Amino acid sequence: MNELTTSTHDGIKTKIYTIRGLQVMLDRDLAELYGVETRVLNQAVKRNIERFPEEFMFQLTKEEAENWMSQIVISNKERMGIRKMPFVFTEQGVSMLSAVLKSEIAVSISIKIIKSFVEMRKFISNNALIFQRLDLLEQKQSKTDEKSKRYSVPSKISP
Image (tube, rainbow, N blue to C red; front, top):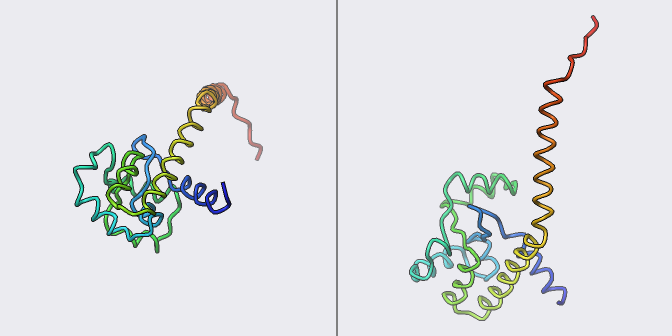
């Protein structure tokens, strides 16, 4: 992989979010990668809406959008640029976008995005046991903290 491909690949991975338990990408991030305006991408999708069932694409609720913005610490200036709730695309939706946008860039970028999704899925799968053990440790630590609070003797404060 050359430097440009690596930086594009790493940049794609930072634009994949987990929403509703699914790995997705936002319409504005995809539009940027494809080199089109967000409205152009969304218009192409609307003209071919039968290709995008809910498991391929959905629109964020206001609550989901606010949660997403708070997670990535988006500034008020950038927040003002979001007039409509963004659409998000799953891996299958990204794959369908390359057919709808019909450009060499769209096909090339879609392949890179799908490879990023696959790589992230492998990482999660390969580290599932570690994630489970961390979760178990957190639960045990919470129980220990609860017990120590119940049985701790308050210290005397001298005047």
